[in-house]
Image (cartoon, rainbow, N blue to C red; front, side, top):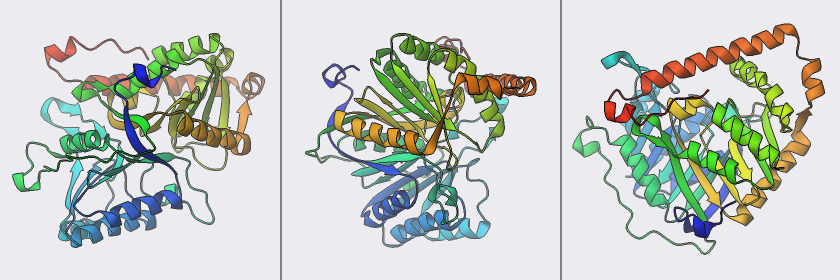
Length: 401
């Protein structure tokens, strides 16, 4: 991997804490909210109206009632089932609350981008960024294990950049002046841990494809080993080529996928790629205890990325995503060990012999059909979310799915 001296966009001076789904994650988010003094930006794709979701809503309401300015931005499609009673309670608490983008916008009948980020920012000093939504299935119960996912709590200079991203998402033109976010961070704290990182985003409508480029760069520069945990794995042709080339260079690549998915059609489309992956000497593992919702990667024990971004063109062209790229040997190696332990204890390896034995004519057709349908859907979403201005269209390269 390229060292930090050759990567000036990575900033040092950070404290970083890894969070895994379940009670530790929810406790960390609740504590962060309860300790906020001035303002909170809470942007998320989904909060369910269940025990885990209500716990977070209650924390935000407590913060607003003690005088903290709370900006709550939830995706209109992801969080579409909140009761009127709960919405009224949120509005009545003083929280500045709105949904991000209706499912469709009428002008030009374009499909709007989805807000797929999961970010909690408090006082410009600390932020939790990851892949977990806020619902019981991400917390787990005594009877059912939580979905596997990760986030990071970061403190340090890059929080200025995080706040800038969140303010741009919140401050739409139609927002009244008294509801706009004007907070600034003037003197960020520098931490002795000195972890180097950067926060990257994907927002195709705003010509931001930083996370996709980051993954491509990591694949290109990988030298020895790579672990990818991917919940909705359907990489494009360019990404598959980079993975194949890395494998040909001798890089040990391990991809961990869900054994059972909450989106069966996407799972069938992913399984259609198993033959390509296995033929190129890339190892596949399936996570068994629960649904795998993680979107993380570690390369060469030096670099890792954690966030909301899935390796597919929905995340590239139809969603707003935020990841944290961390360039730190100690953090990356500890994270890599955790992922290796999960592979050893909770996953099964899929061999090419096993794949072909269980791959009947019907399952092959089902996988091919699902893959083609999702490719078509992705192309439609790309066309409908792309800006219609010539200056932008001239910069758009042809998608290779």
